[in-house]
Image 1 (cartoon, rainbow, N blue to C red):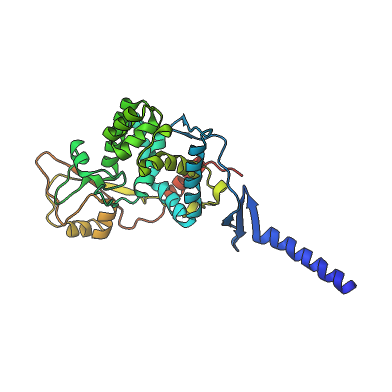
Image 2: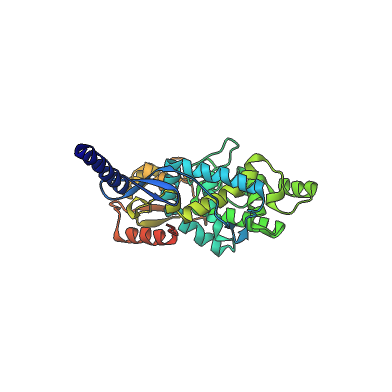
Length: 327
């Protein structure tokens, strides 16, 4: 009898240790503790939509069951693509502050900093099957209409900053036309002409009430879902450590006013490889750069011995503070 009691006692003790050390449950997320003391998601036990959701200060109509089901789909897609979403959060740390500044300057709601996540997953050299390119996935004809330069040597759709300004202009024009940021986003995806036709035919003025292309019908919903996950990472199993977030090294800006006959040599003279040159300037396509009279290009490059600095660590810390932590 004593042996049996001892076995039961040891089972209870081991079970308690296992529960305390191995697994921990926060907000319906199950975690496993690693040897370094950090917690990592093992599975999501359950999921419930938040009571309220907003995008660009516009409420999402959660009382509409169709909207709730669409949101369920996108939340689950992001949450269960755990590795992919974690990588996107890491990349977002280096890009979103830049985009937020531009959007604010242009009078566009800063929630649109999440738009390149839906468009390109923050991949600067992304090209769609339809030919849209860059972080903001701009079509060639639209790029030229808004003054972006495209030729054999460069394609400014892939310029992270210049393309962001163009995207902001388009979004602002869409908002002025449709009077809603959700509709402005839908028009960015499908085109203002298509959206005008859908509104006229269906006699509906809310994005959430329109029957749209499948991609466009998911577009704003995906923005809403990722925004909420990014701003509440721990709630959905993303225990992001400061040092794991990506950030740019200290960069220098080189103004180019004369032709460059060999960009490989130019890169070497500036202490970097051609790969690094193109990585930080994805708008450069070829081996040469021709400068028209009166024209100036700006090339961003890391310093030759660029390492993670105290300044970068501070940037990461500040970014983490912006991500709301819910337990």
